[in-house]
Length: 182
Image (cartoon, rainbow, N blue to C red; front, top):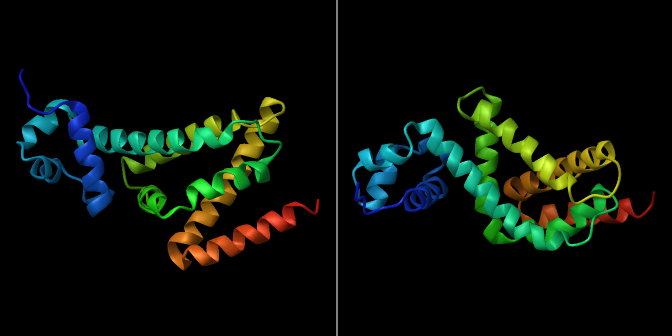
């Protein structure tokens, strides 16, 4: 068809628009305007807004997994090992916009707004499965440790978003010191 922009180009533009304006404000028109193209070209690659939002959330998650994976070289013994390993990577200022967007998606899911109500639980489930692959033990134990790690990390990241990095770092230090006294 000879489009000047590829699906990847449009997805990158949509991701940038979502970071700048929020997921709730993501539209075909905003993506098209950002790229200087017709919104019909966006629709060509993403037939509906739910597809576009789903691809944006998936791309964001894939980026984050690629960032975290090198830190998880050795399988963890438990959720606290995972948290200690992940926190230095997740607590960087360049990760803050990713988690602001994730928490926006979670909030939209919590109030029942589609496609977030459907997509966010799927993303969380995928994160649990992915994280479990970095824990030693039986499948049930790996899953429960992954769920615990994600719960702790999400709490720390939420605290970082709302109360600031110092509060989250203090909480992490407390979690780490308490974890040593089992």
